[in-house]
Image (tube, rainbow, N blue to C red; front, side, top):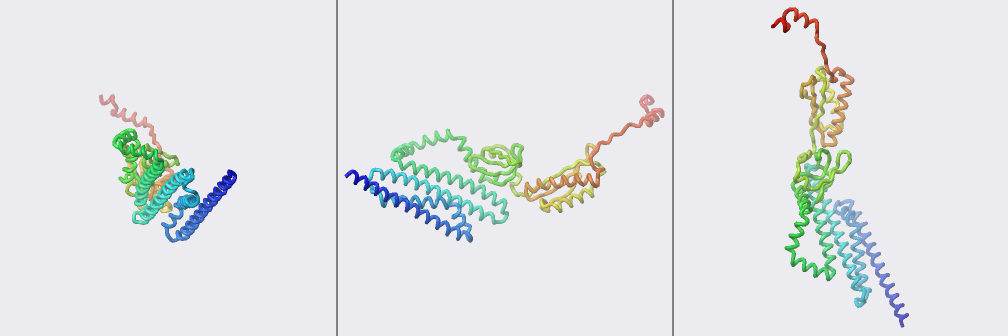
Length: 368
């Protein structure tokens, strides 16, 4: 009798495993087929393409877990002692994969919003602003979704339900204590939302911070990543941007003006130097064609200070244009106007003329 019972149990377990594996494999194949169809349709629709790309894995995982749950319901006797444990585990996994799927759908919504507003007028500036705000909203909503998913998973345990009811009854005291304990963290979160929706900085903005010139690479709810010109990353808390002044070079537009200055001799041919600047700008891909002029800015200390005022579409192009103009004008002075290079002039006093003046009575002794 025990042997027959053991054999029956093993056979029943094998049947359960066969149904379980079959259901999971069938769900995976169904998910693969749906993804294949979406990829085919995504060639004509950006929304469907993003759905196929970003929700492929969580969608398949959700189908597989649901299929496993249905297989267990169909094959396992509810009277078995271990059935509640399996059901509980599957419910937690279902909550997890659904949370994952919702987070992936939020990524799809983020990409679609950015793509839509990027095609409008003033696309670059609008795209950077919308991207910053949508990324902040997406992170905030995903954090809420994950928190709700964890709470739902925890509340499946009866003991935690009682704890949750007790915590809900004393929510006023707990909120005050949590607010005091997490004051700095909450301040950083609110600062991240403030800088995102106040349009003070956007992803892609060029800024000057702490003496470093860089570009805003990432904005989160608690910190901002600035990519420095030499590929370093400057990580600053979001509260920095609400309490400390900084320079935003692309707040209203990305096109920038820049200068290149030279100290040259008074003999420099200004017209020829201006013509050389125009030639350099005309042959440069960095110049946007708006501003390109040469001005004598000052004449002090025995030199002429010449300033080339130039413009470019963005900060990267402006940096490259400065290098081209500076190097080109230096080579032109070396080649065509070496007399224009800065130099110090020292004149020796004429002793004979001084002696003649003294003899004629113009010296100090004659005046006395």
